[in-house]
Image (tube, rainbow, N blue to C red; front, side, top):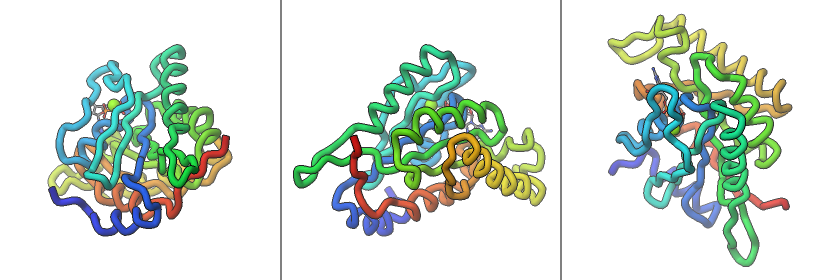
Length: 226
Ligand SMILES: Nc1nc2c(ncn2[C@@H]2O[C@H](COP(=O)(O)OP(=O)(O)O)[C@@H](O)[C@H]2O)c(=O)[nH]1
Ligand SMILES: [Mg+2]
């Protein structure tokens, strides 16, 4: 398999002296976490939800060799009881540790938040960030990706011929990125990097999403503060 920017990932990992890079993917049910993984792997690795069934009940991992391992998590926003259960699973994963030279480090290196670009369920994503991720994970290791770029204006202004947004939709998506930065700041107090927008389903800007991850890979392991 041809791995996108394999050498760059490899070089960044040498700084960490540990492999692979562990990326946890979080977001609301139906945001497109599993679809995003399938696009990254260019095959149906993760089960995509149809209708209201969240499909992903357990946390599962998907590896690109010994380079990057993605953790697909169940989404929040279905019901309070499940949200509690799933939040606990996510927090457990955030505190998962490994030992290196008799010191403990956090397994998860980065969190990728998948946000649904159609604007559905933004509230549950901000809540997830505020209540689950930000209190338990370093803020400079959190990235946000805006999925479903094709549907951001209800399917209008998406050019199916060239599989790209037209200028109007592009402007809209740019604006959305800025407003997400502001909304996250309001909801959680943290300033995230400007998100990238993409579409897992249309395979649009998936390399940009990978660039976003690769270019923001941490330079050191995550010390666990308990
Ligand atoms: N139009 C469009 N639909 C998408 C996109 N990504 C996901 N979907 C659809 O959204 C639904 C939920 O996707 P899924 O990956 O299961 O979401 P998850 O619950 O976050 O894992 C499925 O019906 C997908 O086909 C996208 O980029 N564009
Ligand atoms: Mg899923």
